[in-house]
Amino acid sequence: MLIKPKKLQPGDMVATISPSWGGAGDPELRWRYEQGVKRLEEVFGLKVVPMPNSLKGGDHLYKNPKARAEDLMTAFKDERIKGIFANIGGEDSIRLLPYIDFGVIRENPKIFMGYSDVTVSHLFCHKAGISSFYGPAILTDFAENIEMDPYTVEMVNRTFFSNEMIGEIQPAKEWTSERLEWIESNKSQRRTMQKNTGYELLQGSDTVQGRLIGGCIEVLEFVKGTEIWPEQKYWENSILFFETSEEQPEPNYIKYWLRNYAAQGILQRTNGIIFGKPKDEKFYKEYKDEILKVMKEYYLEDLPILYNLNFGHTEPKFILPYGAMAEIDCNNETFFILESGVE
Image (tube, rainbow, N blue to C red):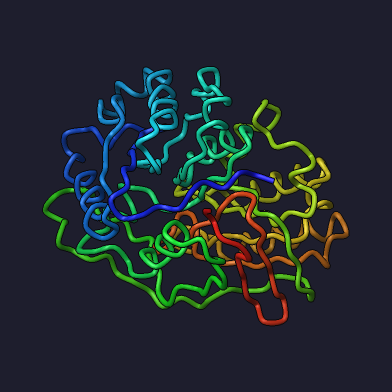
């Protein structure tokens, strides 16, 4: 069992960090960071403090993974800070691994959230035995033009400001992956939303429960074989969550990666899988075909798989607490988180 952090309350202090790409500190993107921070303050009533290295810019932070790791450690150590929010993902936070003190994380459980390459930092938390949260980032969801999406706001409130069961995660009614340039002149332009078709059951006929574990499927490849790759016991009776990044990997890669999970025995140990909506819905059908192909190759056609959920590289998005008990109901094509994310 992973330790749950304490819930947030208005007035709490939270930290922003750049564990991967440092673009939040680049002069041309600073407005975007400030817009995201403003939402944390105005929508949720939080006090926001950037960690010392987090706004030193993309080039500096690329060259200094130790500085990024120090920010993470500083945020966990500081008793005033109740939550830690990643500014954005990236591609190289695996370089932080030599500088992580797992004892510091374990002794100071607190809310930590991000997605994409922040998957690596989630596995730092996982290794330390605390639950963290796969969800929105400052520069994307919090800094959404005009206003945050109400679906995301509701999910933040349900996950962090309440210790009630999170409950049923309804599909978002609309979605977008449209890329508007992050320039200040676009600040008042809304992205185009599209009607969401909802969840799709790929296979399975049961109702299953399991503890959540997963992340961005490409990023998980960085950590296989390292000390932060989860032990076998965490895959047992789990519900896996996988999503693909903005790089939109070719469908063949989904097949190769899933075959590895089968070869490790992970697909045989899990109780079910949820897949996030592919960015722009590119390869929507092709990914499904590859997933089903691997399940057939390994005689796993009964494993419940729910597809097209609103998490990862799509907006709006819900939040997945690592280690929380979740449920896939194949008959009703529904997804529930059966406990609170926080205490």
